[in-house]
Image 1 (tube, rainbow, N blue to C red):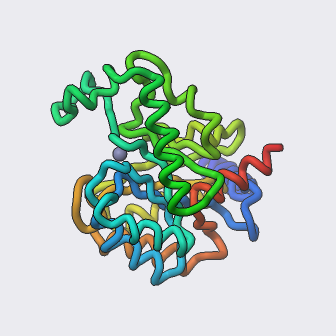
Image 2 (image 1 turned 60 degrees about the vertical axis):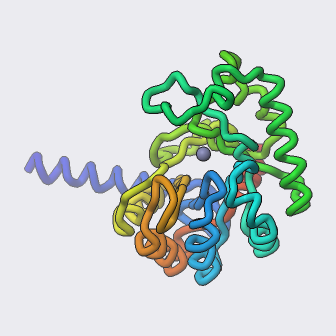
Length: 262
Ligand SMILES: [Zn+2]
């Protein structure tokens, strides 16, 4: 009897949770941002064809010194014209060399040694170069490596006024949108994961009525890779369930949340 009562309470709790959804466009249950960091060849070669096949828009956070950016600048411009977002991921992708497993950080590109003003100027310069490509006035940003401090000073705080939205750290699914800070958004950074596992994240976000932010790197190649198959399964699932999931650029999702908070 007690078990039945407990089950009933759980059931009503679930129903209550499911009933409260953030006011997403078209009464969707969850917003989904598909982001891709670092400007990688496999994103243009493998992620873009899948997104275009299902007519979904992604956000591509470009490090402008990346070879795949410099060699294929016209293609990045083309995807912007297709409605995908070009985001700022700095020019040089400096990260803290002091953290664990950061042997790959070179002394000249160690965020712990880069003056705050120099980094801010680099980020402003990246915004200018991206604007030349896509003419967009709203820009979003992802922090390389999720590191917020340049030479001991908090650069994340110092650049907030330059951006419409900022993805700043690795976290999980948003369980509530109350007090949500669009300039300090946590992401899931999947690698070596199945399509079913990716889909389970978006289903959980729909249950909460919140949002899920994926930050991918390589798709079927490059580093921190997710297979083409797993990525395509997620994208197809989202397209097949478009009444439940609002998939859009992080720019558009950020603007929607900002307008809703006013
Ligand atoms: Zn990165």
